[in-house]
View 1 (spheres, protein in one colour):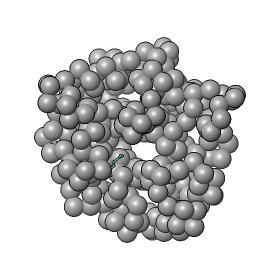
View 2 (cartoon, protein in one colour):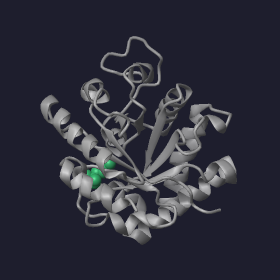
View 3 (spheres, rainbow, N blue to C red):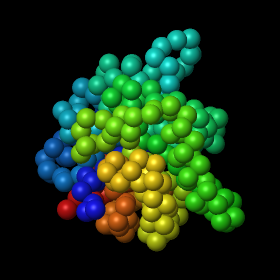
View 4 (cartoon, rainbow, N blue to C red):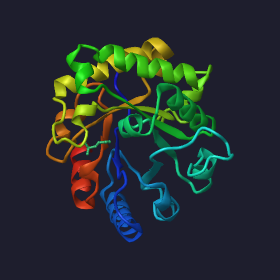
Length: 265
Ligand code: PGA
């Protein structure tokens, strides 16, 4: 089947910037994306404290995501933010299970599945992050790790209807997968296009088996890990690489815009 998936580039701001910087940078990004008429979708995953302010600035030019969302509707969960809260300020969705959350905040495939479920059941988007550590790669466990991360989370989501993963707009499926090899994140050492493609093919094959061809072909698979303006072109034109999740290189609007323009054709 021909690849008709729209490219998606999301900047992950992690725990950087203050309110003034976040607001100014987002405004710059939003104005420039509006002026450039790009063929891709540009998104930002911002710290939750800034989201309400940024949501007022998007004018639908930049898609706004959270970096995490709890699975409960509401409750006694000090310090957490629910999908319903995010939706109430017009945030479209959230990253789920970024490797920094897996490594430092006890995220598991099961909690990831619960978060995916809560988001999708609100009609919100979930960018589910998967990827192997260097030790796992060196032991030849790439496929096993990726398949386990995907399968366990989807099973834990308890979503039976595949259409729930897609939502109502087939051009913007609610679920996306971000392949982020842990050894490439924040290290300046990106995977090669060949390495990325191998992992993306494993992920696509899993999605086709799990959801069937028609639905499994709709989900975007993003590559993440030291993507910059000067290497994004290596990835973006590969089969099954449908965009990028960008950390460090998304922090300066000018650099991120350059990266987005190189991804747009
Ligand atoms: P990086 O981060 O681009 O700084 O490597 C990517 C990510 O963590 O999403």
